[in-house]
Each structure stands twice: as C-alpha cells, then as structure tokens.
Length: 318
Image (cartoon, rainbow, N blue to C red; front, side, top):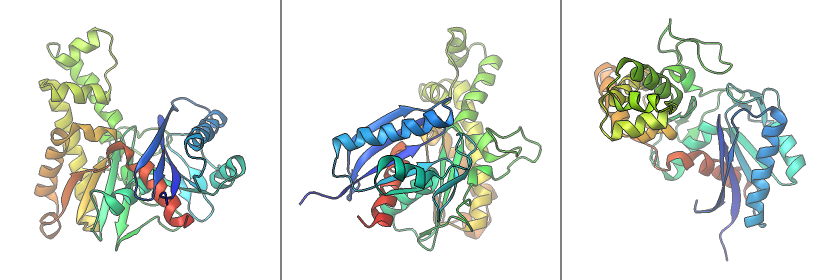
C-alpha cells in the first residue's frame, strides 16, 4: 500500500514553495511561485494554482496544509494580520476550502517550520525548542513541553518582533515597531548592510558587484562572504551578533534545549551562527546558556512546506 499523501504549501513574503508529501515526509513533487508585489486576489489565485499543479501530480492527495506569514486565528483559520502580504482579515481556510474542494489546514509559516523541525529535524526529541526563520523578515516558532504554542488566539510566537534596539530603525512592512529583530537581522537586513558596506569599502568584492550594476542582496552578500570577501564577512558577523542579542532574550525567557535557525539566510552558516553563539555564551543567564544549542535547520528552506504537510497529516487525520 502506498504512503498517504498530502500537499504542503509554504508562502513567504516573496515566494511560495509547495510539495506533495508522504506520511514519512518524503517530497514527491515540488511547485514554486514568485509572489513579490502581488495584490490580494492575484496572491490567492497563485496559491490556488500551486495547489492545483501539485494535485495533477498527486490526484489522491487527501488534504492541503498552508503556512502563511500571518497572525492566524487558529480555531477559524482566518488571517488576522500580515506584515508582508495583503492577507489582513482574510477568512483563509474557508476561502481555500471553497475554491479547492478539499480539506484545508492553515497556520503561521514559522510555526509550521518549527513543527517540522520538532517532528523530524534539528529539534527532534527536545521538549522545549524555539525556531527563528530568517528570510524577508524573521518568523518564530515555540515548542514547550512538546507542544506548539500559538498564544490565546494564534497570534503568538512572533519572535522576529522582539525589540532589540529601542531607538532602532522602523520595522519592515506593516509592523508599527522600531528596532525589531526582524529589521536588524533578517535576510533583508543582510542585503541592506551589504549595500552600506559596499559604499564604505570601494576595494571590496561587494563594491565591485555594485559598480557592475548588481543589486546587493542577502544571498549575494552570503556568497561573497563564503568566497572570502572581508567586507561581506563583516556584514554576516554584524548580523550574527544582532541575532545573538535577540536569541539571548529568548533563551532567558523560555530556557529551551535548542534554538533552530532556518530560512534562506541560514546559508551564512557558521559565519552567521558563530557570532550569534558567542553573544549568547557571553550574555545569557548562566544556567540557560550552559545547555542550549543553537543549530541550523535540518530541512533548510523546505521546513515550512514540510511543516504544512505535517499539519495536514496530523490535524486532518488522513
């Protein structure tokens, strides 16, 4: 008998990654969409089209799980508020069930990344774990006593909006805050600091790429840092240090066994995580810092998609 299959869809601030997933979390087919700049209707249409493409590869798929970058009212499946996408006030689960004609389950994208890493990834076996996903913004997930924590309605675990600088820059998207971890240490922040470094260091590879007309993005900074460019390495060290400040507060608040770092920016590897660990080792309360591990996500940028599938498998009981 073939394994049961569901569809998992991870929708970030700029792109969508989906897949047909077996109950053993093997991905049988993948779908991709670019979402940057889409208005609400076009965005919802793109999500539906991605599911339909996946269903062509797996007509037997019994349910679909969505991870969206929103504060999700978990009981109703409604998107209450989204910093990066036009999903405020959308009755997401009901709308998608109507359009797709199949069971739909929805949660915050970073909650679902944490779920995947806890079930079968870098946090497997931990009773208490945190996850930070570094991409366009920074999402968060909290596992306490083995259970995903969502807050009173589903809007909790927004760890990227922990303030690390009272007088810092305005946060991204529609967040009303300043100095949030997201604006200080996300993949977007890597690109922004990389552009500043290129202007300061005319002899760097970063500056050379800028003169060639290349946009200085987080992935480009990371690539050049791995190639040995000193200015790019300094950027990752700065971002890693800021990340460590945020993690320190979270470690002191939750006393987790492990903090998992995911999202596209984790491609920085030890150039990013090393400075973060050094800050936590210096600043976190001694009983907490002595046992916490700070590790890269096992599933990389597929954690959210796999977590959406886990949600469909577990909540749908398919």
